[in-house]
Amino acid sequence: MSDFMKSIVEEALGRRTPARSTAVTADLAGGNLPLQSKSSPAGIAGLSRPNYQREKRNKRLAAESCVLVNGAQPASPPITSMSENFVEQALSPLLRLSLHQGKSDVAKVSTAKQDQGLNQEQMKCDREFMNCSGMIGQCEDGMSFWFYPNLHQKLASEFGIYGTVHPVMGIVTAEQCLPSQLLIYDKLVSTTSLENEVKWSKDSGSEFFVRLSGSEQDAPIMMSVLKQWQNRHKQLTERAIAFHESLQPSPRVTKLLGIAPGEALTVVEGLSRLRSIALLDRCFKHGLSSRLRYRIENRYLIVTGEPDEIREASSVMLSISEPYMK
Figure 1: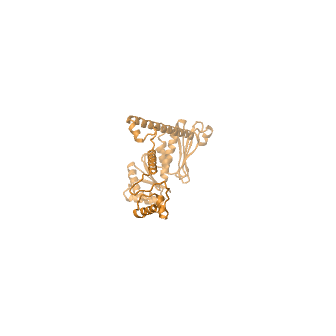
Figure 2: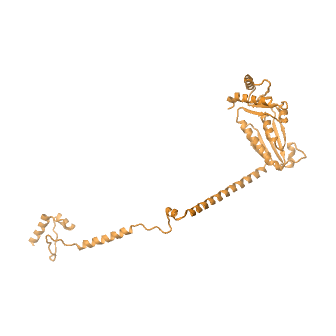
Figure 3: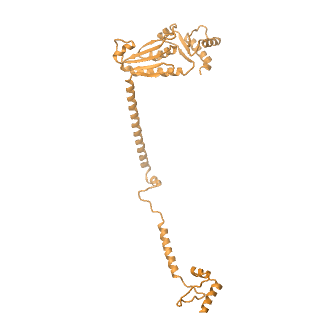
């Protein structure tokens, strides 16, 4: 027995064979020797005993690892899911064009329906507006524009109309009278079939008044005249100094302004009396015709003469007054 233990110690200390089990190495490090039963054969130097349990365990682990590797492969996509490349390659160009045109047609139909709905709403609002009496606009200087469609017969006398029925009325009023009011009135109203009346005076404190009247068929024309008048007058109020020219004013305009029939005229509004005198002085010194006639008022200047002379006067006065027009 002592020989057996001696051989074990020599083998462990002298040969230091690396093939040891973990348990034997731990026992040797702790100073313990493994106990073997009498029936266990002694280890013979130079011989290696196969470890069947380790081989079975390695085979089992290898088999499980193979199963895991095969199971980690991604699942094939379902038949119903198609990539974008597949769709582009599978669908013919003609079919793709048909689908695109179908979408465009649907979008066009939807847009057309929306536009049709908006047009119907606009027409409805226009009809309601055309049937409502009231002020349709007002400028900063107080000039107001009124429209009376389907005016009641009893109210026609309020506008100085008796006997004849005029269901459509348009009114333009301003607190002060200016020549530009007559010139705009002459251009917009004289070319229509609307009946009209105008009150204008150069006397200070006088109120400007225009009445337009017509039949029910004249309502769109009257509304257009009122809107154009409002837009033009609004542009004039945005300027410090405004120029107006009329080479062929109507007899009504020449009569109200107090100028000779057949004369052309140019008007400069926004000037005081002193500035009007200064403007004329510069113009005459620039060679303006001395045959021109003028009238200086508190808020405007009127120059009259032959059409060619008025064209020249308008050009000269405009160039001299340009620094003051902003």
